[in-house]
Length: 289
Image: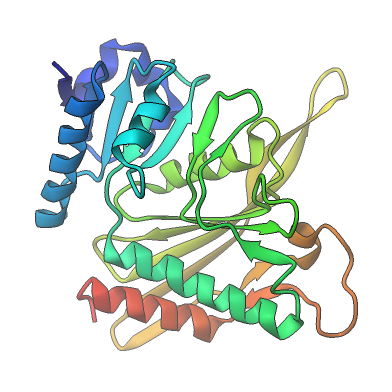
């Protein structure tokens, strides 16, 4: 029988040391895996609970996964199942399943997707940087797996996305940071830019961050890449005023891997007005406006 408890009880387990748990909501269930049919029942129940009660965690921590886990999960969810985050190197064979995305999250991701596609169309490069349909990605050494909320790859090179968007609401900024660093640092990664969207559950505020590679020099003079925030934009509503602290910029050369050709090609810039409109749509869904 599947064994279930909460994150507060996990401190005696090796999984408690895993960075994967950082930033997950309090009370996130932990399940020791031994049977996919029983796990599916837990996943479906948690999804229904989240639909009825927004205070419930949309995540499940699954420990003791085996080599057949992902194939078995695909078999019980052949079309669309829970989103996966997996890192064998962080605390053992542990998987984080996201069983439900809120409408507010889907709206934020979808609106940013629309703005990016429109910018690509104006530049005439919409067939060069293409949406990858949120496909699950696995690192070369098979120790890391993730399904993004939104991703883009270069035409003809869609094994790994160059641009990734991750949206969160129940999790904290630290959880999104770990997701961003995973995309940039996983073995074989081609990701150049990650945009995280953190939606505040309790007030009309959204934080956008752009992550790129930074390099740390080690004692042996080698340079080790790691993910780092290079831009933060806040969008918030207070009183009768809605403000954005800046434009969200996705550098052209970073994602296309080449210099610009002609006057049309430029950085992908989501303006303050566009970010404010995105925020207002999300906040209306959250019933803040």
